[in-house]
Image (cartoon, rainbow, N blue to C red):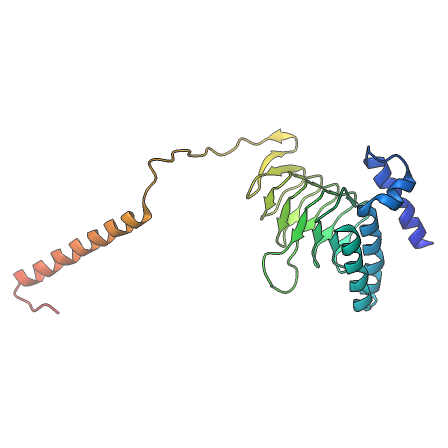
Length: 222
């Protein structure tokens, strides 16, 4: 009965949130996001009971069928809506709150091969646009929005909207945040090699001056 109840809840939530859905039967049989999430629910239960191989098999089969990869160990709350879904990846230590929406191409990934918590924590009611990458063990706060193709590498406070590569916050608590001034001068750009050579030249002049002072005192140069 628990699985049937979960199934009905997932279908109802998706049907209410997707204006393209014409019927709940369509959502059940034709929506890859629903199939992927339901497969994850089963795989997650098996994973928690120590049936790792079977859980992984279900996860890999769902990826083959839907193009969506969700690790069985990830923690996902109620009401996850994966729209379209192709290319979505949710890592092993990722945590997703309730009533979140992910579009195609979203990655909730890590930044290396470190052990422990290495994937993001997504709060409640978060929307992540198509192609966005959220990489690292930080938190994206409740009610936040991540724009399409953004690359999020740092924590995002609640009620925020972030865009860009790397992502930066443009709105928080419905108040726009003025962007930092960007220097667009592409001509007067300092040459780092020339700057280093100038520093070396100054140091050589200092040494030369010190050696001349030693000679004037009649001391031997080392």
